Image 1 (tube, rainbow, N blue to C red):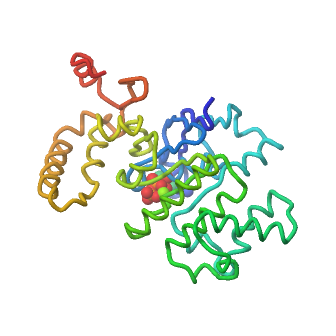
Image 2 (cartoon, rainbow, N blue to C red; image 1 turned 180 degrees about the vertical axis):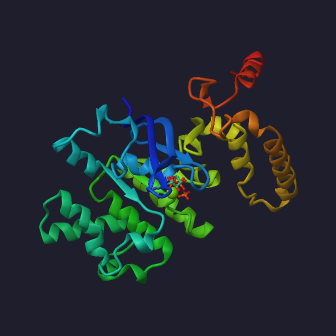
Length: 320
Ligand SMILES: Nc1ncnc2c1ncn2[C@@H]1O[C@H](COP(=O)(O)OP(=O)(O)OP(=O)(O)O)[C@@H](O)[C@H]1O
Ligand SMILES: [Mg+2]
């Protein structure tokens, strides 16, 4: 059984307008998304701005009203109420992109990290402090951080504090919404390494949300690519990075910056070729309203929103 199973999730927002302020349209922020996350693994949800990633994450946290669909946690519907719900709230935590606004500026680090502990555990002052020091240690910060305020830390350090707070209640799943997007490349790597260390030590799963396939590459076991509220491709890391089939995935891959100076000219050429293919071929991959086609399985792990003729072509070549 998967830790989390999202089944055909839809979140549509009404758009109001006109003289009577009636509902005139719907924004399909998430429109029929399904995936599952295995215990102890990292699942990447990748797509451009506005594709519906945060809305999906918030639905899993229970912060967004679902229009349709089901979310199962260890096989149980999260809409169930009562003690199951309290357990769920404790087991699913979030790390935000913007640590300056998500960490209360008027509170010291000790109470910021202790807050989830106070909600779910009854520790005395001494135990609580020890626990916070342990949590700081996991993310490479010393006990001197306890009495400081968020503004006294760098962006990378603040993200590590966010990681420490998210793991305080020993959750099963952490939803990390663009956790390193605001950081410099070198600091990104450092925060990601701490996230991996936390995973190794505590066995937590991540839903890692990002607009950048380069960032999630070394983090994720499985990845879904989202575009305009729908998944266009889903698969293992190998499926997505080594055998991408959707034009949009290929374009995101081509957009990963080339760090090797010698490879840059070649990389630029490839990127331009993909851009050209995207311009010419993209219409095939979307319906008349510009939304992704239904996903089609091409292997046991890999599904792609392909038009029928391309799928047949792949089958004929023995690639699906
Ligand atoms: N409360 C809301 N009311 C109306 N529309 C909304 C609301 N929240 C989000 N949307 C719309 O839903 C779509 C998806 O938004 P979402 O924030 O999930 O995207 P995202 O993939 O997280 O983007 P980003 O990378 O910019 O964070 C967008 O078109 C957004 O404008
Ligand atoms: Mg977002």
